[in-house]
Image (cartoon, rainbow, N blue to C red):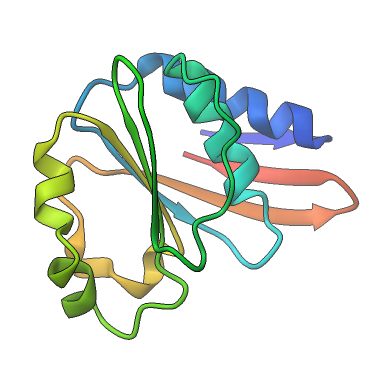
Length: 134
C-alpha cells in the first residue's frame, strides 16, 4: 500500500494509524533518505501507542526509550558501523522487552530484523509531500 501525504501532520497521522495496530514485540523498519520524514512518522507511531512525549531523532544516542503501556524503542542506525554494534548494545534484549521497535536507517542493519518486521519506505516528493509505502 502506498499513501501520499502533503504535510508533516499527514505523515504523523499515517504513523499514528499504524501505531494503533501494533502489538507488543512489533518491529518497524524505516527506509528513506535524510529529511524523508522518518522521525515525523515515528512521532505518529508513538501517538498511536498512546505515548504523549515529544519524540526526537536518536541520531547521537542510537536509541531513545519512551515509556507507555506498550513502550516505544526508537532506534537510529545512521552512525552504526556494522550490525555487530547493534547486537553489542543489546538489540536482542530490546526485541524481548515487549515494546515496539521503530528503526530509522534500517538499510544499515539488514540482517537484524525478525521475519515479521513491518517495512515502511518514505520518499520525499518535494515541499512537504511524501510517498509512504508499507
